[in-house]
Amino acid sequence: MSGEQALVQRLAELQLRLQHLDAMYRAREEDVHVLSQHLSQLLVDSLSAGGLTPEAKSLLRNLTGLAPPPPAGHLLRLPSAYHFLPHLLLNPNSLRPAYSISKGRTGVSVVMGVPTVKREVQSYLLSTLQNLLDSMSLEEKEDAIIVVFIAETDEEYVLQVANEIKEHFEAELNSGLVEVISPPASYYPDMGRLRTTLGDSPERVRWRTKQNLDFAFLMMYSQPKAMFYIQLEDDILAKQHFLTTMKSVALERIANRKAWFVLDFCQLGFIGKMFRCVELPWLVQFFFMFYNDKPVDWLLDHLIHTKSCNLDKDYKHCKKAKDELWIHYKPSLFQHIGTHSSLKGKVQKLKDKQFGKVRLFFPHNNPDAVALSEIKAYKQYTLKRAYMGETFFWGLLPQPGDRLWFKFTTPLMMKRYIFRSGNAEHPSDRFYNTTIEVLPLLQPSNQYESYNITNDGFVIIGKFDSMGLAEGKVDPKLGAIKEMRLTVHSESDNWAILSEVNYSFDV
Image (cartoon, rainbow, N blue to C red; front, top):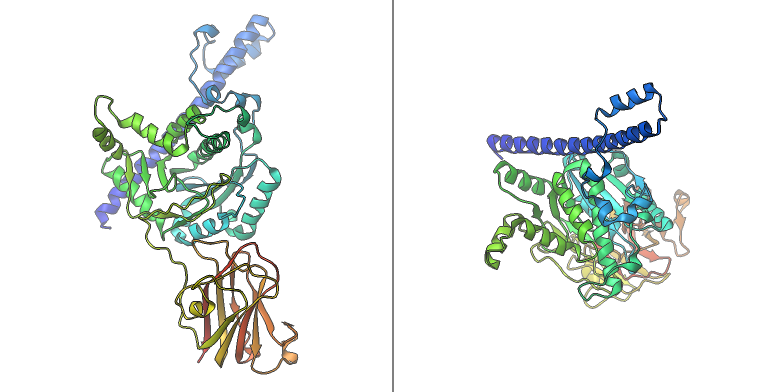
């Protein structure tokens, strides 16, 4: 980027920040106005009742800075969320998170919303968060927030997910990069009284209605934190430095005074949709108006249609007008990896063809060895081919005591090892409760006292973590290694993928 381009982009960013600050000022001004109306009404009521001292009357007049309001019949009131969701008036905490982990980071360029719900088959959330973080540079991390919205009201489940996030992403939580929230039960209307629309089953109507309300809550929470909002899902992959690309595209259009409402960086559903935070109230209000009527991606389409299409023109003209506000970026920056939808019984196999190929294994030039497995391989995904770097190993339902062996042709002075399980398309097919063991060329002696040793002389040097990764150093005191193996210690509900086997060693 040239110096002139950088300056133009910086000016666009400052312009957007000014718009954001203005929107926040107007929101605070609205709060003060509403409070003033309430205080003024209190003044009128108190004067009528004769219950205030002259000093109190004077204080209230000075505090409001307003004359007493006209009679109630002449006071106009703007519509709000309460018109469409009147049940929210029953509980003052309905629009506050029931659970929250936040360091209060604000003033960043981008806030990402990641809603997650309980899935009956498998959860992709931790893998998605890890992928997002791995795909971001340090500079991007310092200028962003990821808000994980646990869209459930079961307190036990919310705490379970939150604790998993704490365990794996403690540093990101402490820095303010990652936040976790959940909604109060009082936020949702009576889901048993929804209207059935579009010929959908009651279960599907409840599912898409809740999704509309979930997105609205997440957007309302995220809006004051940044200039741009990106809607994501909990079962996706992202390309490297996706934030820099998205921000650059947005600022370029702003600098060139090109209109847009949504920048679309994925062709599927509501994934990778980018909005200016100052314009999120349009969406939130629209979602509240029609939350019971249509799915969230349809509502976005209808909003764009309403903003851009001329009823006097034909479909072709309408599509062209919509394309000027809904900008599709290629190639896609996100890919959907989940197979099992949060809607019970729904299998979601859609893939974004614009994303390109997903890396499913990591080949290495490993030393000569015989690779053996007691876990039956699926089709051509054998351990031998995985060790040779031709594909990944995919084994059927590991059982306690199952082992994978690597018997080296020549004993190695091994320095480090990496075993990676699961892959982008099947992140839950990992090795769980599985140890890494080596068989030294020389029999165990007193120098191995700090290690646990199996009955057949293997030294346990590590294990897979909950993210499916096992890596570590090999103590040089162990000497040359002639065999290495993985031993499974508990039954698994999933198949197991070994997507990377790598050693570093002295020649």
